[in-house]
Image: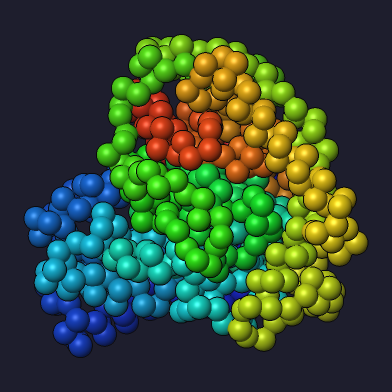
Length: 540
């Protein structure tokens, strides 16, 4: 595909893309009602945070808020203004929350009267639009769910209880890239095509594309993504941010449009590791609506930020997987730089080759096909509103809709309908083989080489986005951790020109804190991340 190929014009969705006029109205209303003092609305002009949102961390935000130099209304307004100014080029935000300023004002009142409820008090958070919210619904990018009327997901309630401000919903790869083998990451029928934050004609990777591009471009302080296999770490790597796919069961999946309960999880995406750690502390916890959370160890920390140690690589043994074998020369160069950085930080690097990848590859997709119909239909039937409640109903809807099949089909949907039922012997055998192989692959490698973690390149540089031709995806390292249900965190590692490349640290089940600390140590020693410039194109 020619590097000069124009991006497909943005399709106006049936949902309103609320921009700056709404922001002005909202600010005027909250001031008129006395919800926030007029001097405070749009204030905070001397704030260090507002002068450089890209560099601002949650601890710095909380410090300025405690000192009265910054309010949540200030911060939320600044992010809404950036959405208004920049998202016409990025298309990362599907819809801003019309109550965002009101939520920010409520947070400021709570802080004045009672203090902060958590480190996320007053902090704007962007949600992937497969996460249910009472105020804005959840579409998974599909026009079939425009009239769904869900309640808040458990993680949304936790964010609200922590005082966070939901600033809006992020665009995504429709149905989390599980509708067609020729789908384009970052495209949905509801939201159109999301751009990579660094080079606009390049792909943001999927399926948490809007979350990755949005947080990279400072359209929110943190974002929530979801992953079945690669959908947090790939868009985080491609957009140059931190992304954590937690251990399966650490974060409730209640109220999240599923692919498979055997692999799905939500997780934080942020410009800084400490922000991802603080967000995970709010998200995690047992939930009677998600049985997997009952397995969280009783001694599992909730203080992930306190567990971060800039020197945690010193003395660590790190296995390096896919070194020099990604098929991407640019990625291999970044991998070597990452290896050198680990060694310079005092770590010992051991080259490893993870076993059983052929078993994982042969069984993961068949298992997901069987589980998808079961888990999606369970979600649809439990979600109020006017929408299809079966996979066959969605297939019929798409066949009648003028937009859904404009660029690619729904052959994965059709394969899922034809697949063996999730409880059948064939489906259970596929799931057992895939999960057992993935866990053994990681566990045996860690034990054999006495490793603290495994490091691998997360992504190759982003490719030119096309519609109707699929993704020019080179490789990914997300599979073993995703299928095993083990934690995986990606952190910026380097660049190919202006395009980011990340490295992932993954390891044993429930080792989320240790992996975040290793990623933090890598981040602090390398300091390679830079703010995106929204370059239109760079050619080949």
